[in-house]
Length: 101
Image (cartoon, rainbow, N blue to C red):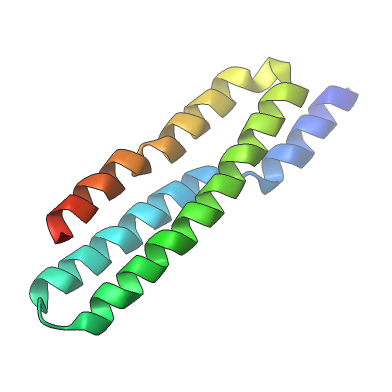
């Protein structure tokens, strides 16, 4: 019983799916904005600042999910899927950066 309560408590704060999807959407919108206005350096600056911010926030969430995998061994399958979804943004970001530069 205590494990279920603890699992619900920890997973309540794990909004990694929303974070991963939100990061993807915001990054895509910034790339499309940059492509629509290629000579606007402010969009490039905002995009690069966003990438740095997203790296920090997504890294914190990744560490939190790894922590949850350690303390909640029964939920590792669900947590692994959340980790994979969060890590899917890395190759997408690399492709976007290669597209820009």
